[in-house]
Amino acid sequence: MTKETFSVKDFEKKYVARLKDRTLDWNVLKFQEEIDPAYRRAQMRYIGRGATANNDTNVIAGEHFTLSTMVLPPGCIGPLHLHDDVEEVFFILEGEVTALIQEDSNSEVHEIKLSARDCISSPPGVYRGIRNDGDVEARMLVMLGAVKPNLPTYPEGSELEELRKQRSKEREAIIKD
Image (tube, rainbow, N blue to C red; front, side, top):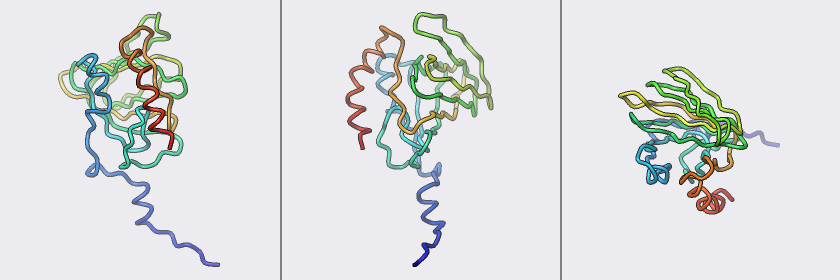
């Protein structure tokens, strides 16, 4: 019986994601930006596809969560959305942002100021968003608590929620594999 030898090269190929091999993806959330230019932001995926289900082969395959970085230009917003199945974590690396929290689509939107190295975790079932009120790009880590999270929903009656309904079938076809 032969014992397989551990290969650090194979391990590195499978489990290391380097900045030099990544690019900011300004198109992954472009469908939101087309509704409102204030929704412009970019994502750089490291572990898993995230809720957008982009078929990015240049990521570490996630087993239990997703991890990406996000760039939020000054004045831009990650719109209110709800994940019914996972918590979502925003860890601010640079800049100052305002986290937006809403219990349900009919309740008040609460604002929480966050600075570099602050972190917020939004549980499943709570609307969350993020806004850059500063003069410089905000950079953050974004983590979702599942490999293939359900597609997020948006407040009832919003243009984004109507678009989500149209896109959900398209997303399911992508993540079937």
